[in-house]
Length: 190
Ligand code: GLU
Image (tube, rainbow, N blue to C red):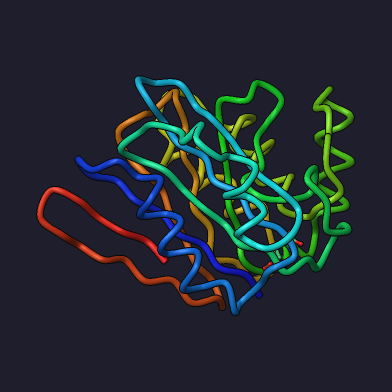
């Protein structure tokens, strides 16, 4: 189990993500992380430990951006540590993913991606999602995610964000809960 949050709108995303994660922390608390997109630049911050450890690490250096994603983890694959905390990115660092659930065929996918030259810097099943999005991306993030979902088996609620398609968050679910909050000039995912 874990908690995932996404925000896209006109407000600064960071406090909204932290507030959402604090409400979802009961779902997982071995590590936490956020990614924000500001002027087409992605910034990822994560820390092993409870959400307060992430906040301590960030301190006054609060990331800017009016869209972002956040995760509070309860590890299933890969020990709790900074490297395995979500959000996970691809080789280029242009795509980020948060995920609740288990990608059952991640080992086979990881092997295929490694053979194509992808470098894995984490032990989690989730990491294959970021590399698969990178592999399939041709300018349309939703199209890439749809192709990724055809390749993976298992359960998931996930959110993907990219500086290459910077005005939307793509989310998907299968056998894991996910809600979308539609607001006026802003939308939420949890
Ligand atoms: N399987 C993923 C991991 O171990 C997600 C775990 C979760 O749902 O918290 O990172």
